[in-house]
Image 1 (tube, rainbow, N blue to C red):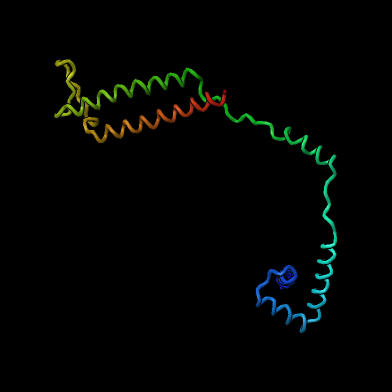
Image 2 (cartoon, one colour):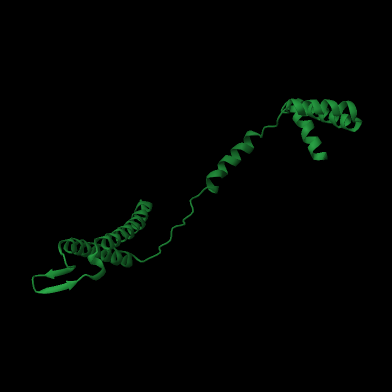
Length: 162
């Protein structure tokens, strides 16, 4: 309760209280002598604080602090080599090869009515699940998303080096 009273006093002195709170403070000043004493102490403290001039740091202190700021903000190397370059290139080549083969199979499966892929008129390749264009498109989309992540990973390293 005492905390609420002190908050109410400071709101009144700063002029931030509502009309209801203002009426309550004026009523408490008239009825409660301890509240009136607290109010007068707060008013004296406020006038004393308003008469003080704010301190400014010396120019020497300011110059010293600003000289030390660049040393505090040196860049921190957080990027580490996760994979060797040959693995990244191998994965990129594999993704590209699978993408080209997938596109060929996709267009071949759309042309085939029975879901079989005829190679050079001699060999028949049963596409199974991939004969469904929806499944194959979902496979291609997931492959595309994986390749975009790979490109982002490698290009981020390339741009950070420059």
